[in-house]
Length: 507
Image 1: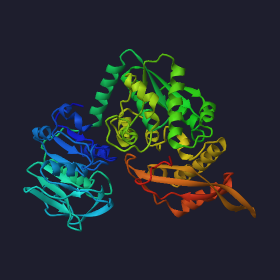
Image 2: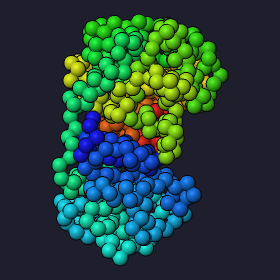
Image 3: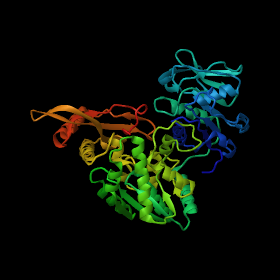
Image 4: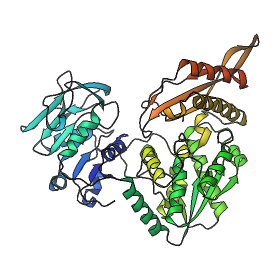
């Protein structure tokens, strides 16, 4: 969208940076992410936000920004966590290093009830993730809020520079969205964000880049690739949609995928290559290596299938980009390699052969886009499924036997969720194999079999997630069915880990 009166978010490497963009859009304003060194190429923003980051301001390679150019924009600026510490230094203050990391919920005590903290509770929960803290404050600096210990956690320098030590973008900061909205209100008129505007610009961009070339689109049946395929069809370009069955799908998923695309009027080709994938994965247990093998093979199969196709389209989303930290300029700490961020795809990107129209959207925004494209609600509300398939739900080496167990357990769990009316209440649910055998008793005899883990989470965009408190009766029924019907399992566990610190998937 037009870079005029938008909210420019500078990325200093926080794993939550894209969430800031997402929250601004949720509030109805258009936001875009930039690297600090690109400050001369951000158009004319209406407001600026400096993100958090994993570095300390005292590190030799600590990220920086051109402060004179930042000031020259003449718009409100909000520094979050690292961004606040950097601003305090720029205005003449200092930052103190600490050996203790403050991570988790904390109490916010505003010193005023207007401006940034208008309508905010006297004591509000916020989410901290830092080790350093501001020390010496400039003479004209105002303390807007402190924690229970009296340590400043929100500052203001002059009329339009603000800083907050906590992360307002995560749901654990209970009134974070209101604080962020209060900041944006100081900016006056900002560019609005509407999915219809985004769709129009995506369609124009696709037509401009593709022209009369052929674009190959990989489809899996998931929301992202489905919306991508329909978007390409809507753009009217020469698209070839290919479904690669890599043998890592759920029970009867191939038939479900073909039926859904038939409903949408999108023709797809199926390439059966499960033997190839499983043979290459045999004996491989390292999760990063598995992802690279799957991603590399996926592209190899693609290009072998399509021959001399000009472009490859992918349903890459914002969370994929940030967690892979694939941008050479990224300050983020790498979490994991996504299947669409392996070396082969990065090479194709360098050649200008990769099309990723959804790369600035979050999952809920993709669903909203799908609705505007006329995709049926049951397809759009399908739970997310990872590109590497069941490989990320099978820690350790992958075998046909393990995949059978996961498929059968997953099918029982998902069916129980649907029967009890819980499927649409959770964001994602699945069964994952725990690579440990445990002792049990079956038919009065000792058994030594695998354990299975059930997981159900609520999330907005996969950047953070919380586990769902499913009814005990549902869990009991699911466990009984699995233990009685699935050979090779004698123990069922329910995963109650949040993200962070755990990830949603096992790998």
